[in-house]
Length: 156
Image (tube, rainbow, N blue to C red):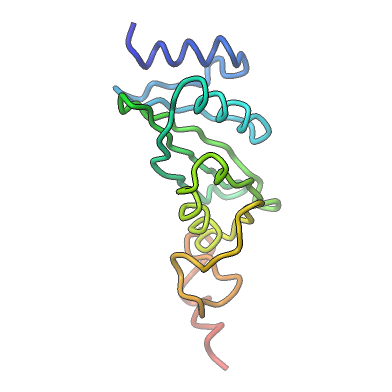
């Protein structure tokens, strides 16, 4: 049994709702989707019990009616868990993971600036990566955003 399959089995033993949801995409890459309300339960377990101790990135995706957020965490062997949650467009709110990884702050600021996500618990700080004078309400990674929208905001 591969290391990826062992990880899959441990997750299934502890979280039956993951049945038929875990995909071993290739060597060292495991993907699964979770309901948002189950995220911290599984995330906490993966970090504390399974030793996924490196935050590689957080990816945000505008998928139309929902936004997808993939938390990429790795263990010492270089196996990456890609944990995805979906959040409805009309309630675009996440809870910060900076209590787990202080380095998450930069990724969460990107989600705020580029997708318009509200991250509960994220401390006040500078914008990133957009400049401080970027127009409010303009989120360039949303599918419905167009450069023309920015030009309209700039014209008198």
